[in-house]
Amino acid sequence: MRIVSSHGLRPAPTLALALVLGVTVAGPGHASDTTTTPTPPAYVIGVETQHYLPAYAVEDGAYVGYARDLLDAFAADQGLRIAYRPQPVRRLYASLAAGDIDFKFPDNPNWNAVFRETHTVTYSGPVADFLDASVVLADRADITPGAVKTLGTVTGFGPWPWMDRINAGSVTLAENANFVALVRQVLAGRVDAAYASMAVVNRVLDQELNQPGALVFAPALPHDHGSYLLSTIEHPEVIAQFDTWMRDNIDLVAALKQRHGVERGVAPQTTGVPNP
Image (tube, rainbow, N blue to C red; front, side, top):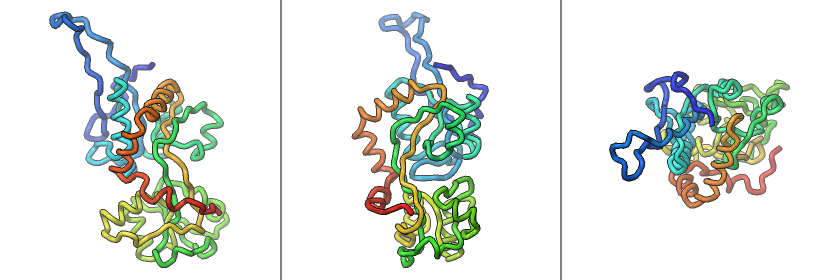
């Protein structure tokens, strides 16, 4: 395992460096013995700077959310040291390819096919399921793709299921700096729909705007149902270790998902719904 030097990590408060989760101890019965156990390697996980709660966010320099709690629990249980390096979405793949980070979260093989063609990437099993959906005002739930002329999204997130229509010029894309602005845009009728995570939209409506249920999933519009994964180029053995840990800790993982609401609005709304 490669030990990552500390000079490549930015100091707090700019970044959220998590953690040292393993303690060097003296051998049993030798309190005065200077011999210590080897320090475990430190891995850097590249994470997104986007405010994407309940899944993840960077707040006051700290990485927070479901992903942080889950990855910290894994590292602590396995005696690993990890650090989180927040970067803009578009920079993370370059950092992974260059070896500046050891892992990328979240990732999915469907998100960057070109990258997979030129790099050997190992992906974990599902960390959490997501529904990236086209959301609309509640009274427009039956809207069809032809009625959408303007589509909102957050800067850095590609609305992949809509790209054919956007490239053809039948749909105009409006980017927003954050999810609160995006949700407000749909509520105000400035765009016909927004392409975003259902779990994130539900959280914004409930906790930040106090308008639960004001926006809903439009089943006839393009959407993407999948899973967030952990990826690496250099450390497939740690991915295998992580997958085993996830299988061995099903109850803990389920409790964390429930506590954060990371899969709220995901599975029930995709059952039996075609993706046009």
